[in-house]
Length: 172
Image (cartoon, rainbow, N blue to C red):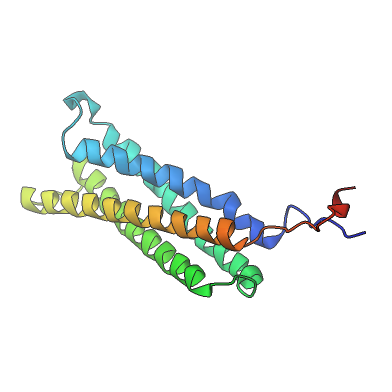
C-alpha cells in the first residue's frame, strides 16, 4: 500500500505564503488609487498611512513567496511539462516584488514628507506620488499575471499536486 505524502512538504510552503501579498498589495493599491485621485472625502487623510501599513508586510510576504517559490521550484521544476510557464512565473514574480518594493520606499518617503521631516518642492512631491501610483498599478497587473501563471502550473500541469493512484488505495 502506497503512503500519502505529508502536508508539510517543501513545495507546499509556497501556496501557504503567496496569498498574503496578493491580498495586502491589491488592497493597498486600491487605497492608493482612491487617495491619489482624490476619490474620497478630505477627512480620509489617514488612508495614506493605511496603504503604507499594507504595503510593508505585503512586500515582505512577496519576497517570502519568492523564496518559498524557489524552494518549490527545486522540487517540482523537473516534473512540470512546460518549464517555460514556470520560468515566466518566476520572472514576473521578481518584477512584482521589485515594483512593490520601490513603491513601498516611495510611500515611506511621501509619509515622512507629510510629517514635515523633509520639505521638498511641490513638483517633486507630486512626481513621487505619481511614480508610486504607476508602480503599484504596474505591480498589480504583474501580480495578476503571476497568479494566472501559477494557476496554469497547478491546474494544467499539477505542479506540487499529489496524483492519487487509480484505485485510491493510499486513502484506505
